Image (tube, rainbow, N blue to C red; front, side):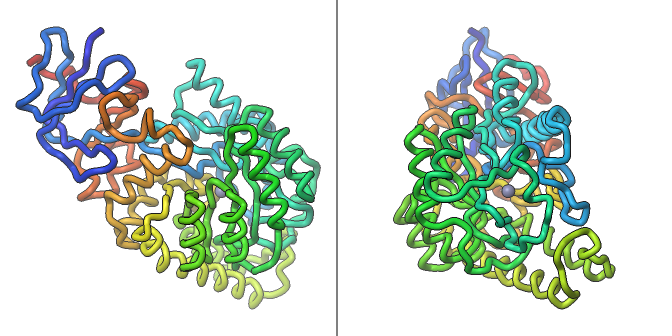
Amino acid sequence: MQRTVFRNVNLLDGNQPARPGTSVVVEGPSIREIAEDAALKSRPDDRVVDLAGRTLMPGLWSSHFHTIFSDWAPAQAPMLGLEAQPGFMALVGQDNVRRALDSGFTSLICSSSAYNIDHALKVAIHRGLTPGPRLFACTRELMTPGDQPDGSNSSWYMEIGNHGIVRRCSGPEGFRHAVREELGRGADIAKVSASAGHGVGPADEIESLSFEELRAAADAAHGRGKKLRAHTASKRSILDCARAGVDIIDHADRLDEEGIEAILAADLSLAPTLLFSTRFLAFLQGLLDQGIDLGAQGHLVESREEFQARIDGGRADFENMCEVLPEANRAGLRLLVGDDYGVISIPHGDYSAEFELYVDKLGIPALDVIRWATRNAAETMNVYAETGSVEVGKLADLIVIDGDPTRDISLLGNPEATVAILQKGIFYKDALGAGAAA
Ligand SMILES: [Zn+2]
């Protein structure tokens, strides 16, 4: 079997600072050898590729990924997946996962989906029908009756049937049944909507899911060997999710010291998804400033002042998270990269902006954010023994970046800067040239 020998590599293995002057050998699906350039001898039949100091690193993970979202916006009165034909939504999903792979994401942990499209995509990718990352499929979003993520209960279309992205359940038995049934259709992770808030409005401290319902959902997922994630923003709900053993807490806008301690004690992961908050708050403010009447769209917004108060509340939650997140990172919380791409103002493909937000605006060290996008995600899905870092014996899920992302984080998630992509040792993208023979 021909080996590929990458020479003159700036190695970012996902854990340590960059190591220039390194060689990495890929054989079959795996990483076979890592050594200093001078210490590694290549064989006559090796394909030797001189990376000329470019960066080789683990393929990225996006850990809050809605395959089917595209231009989703409240001002357009969408029905959250109830309005489009399933076949069309599957094609949207196919386009989105290919775009993620083109941007260097070799793995995705999905967030709520509809019509089992995530699972269908996973099977299609596995069978080679369409290119795509390793995909952990998600269920629909399980919610209690009369609830929606922003807590406004004002959108009539949220209550239509049970066919799209939202499934209504009530009581511990209701959630246990729904989680089992949804996961039985092939998903790897179930999703519940545990509290109001995140971007769309303030995280009111009202109960969406009870602790007993959360606990039942988590137990049902774990009983089947699978995971549970939860849309959560209020303080009370963050603490409930930690106590219930939810595997991924999404958003967590009202995170504080107590929340950090609870999540650390329970050893859970957190996807802060702050690009959505900043973009969506600006989008809503823009609607208000233009005098657009959301009431005319069927939303129950009584006055301009009420709408402004909701935006201000959402902004306060966002600002809290900007302050707390660097602290949570320092405390060792297992944080994740990934966001609500496909919602209007945050299109799929705009992945670099998220890395820039965390590193350039919030001041979190680039190496830490790289770990969020590699090791932390692989650990969350219990596959770190086989992928998620560049180590001998692990799968060669690798990307080559034209530059050093620890100096310029905007290179990550950027298809132009991502000059090679390998999945299990096979080149999906190879813009490296033939490589000079040794
Ligand atoms: Zn989401």
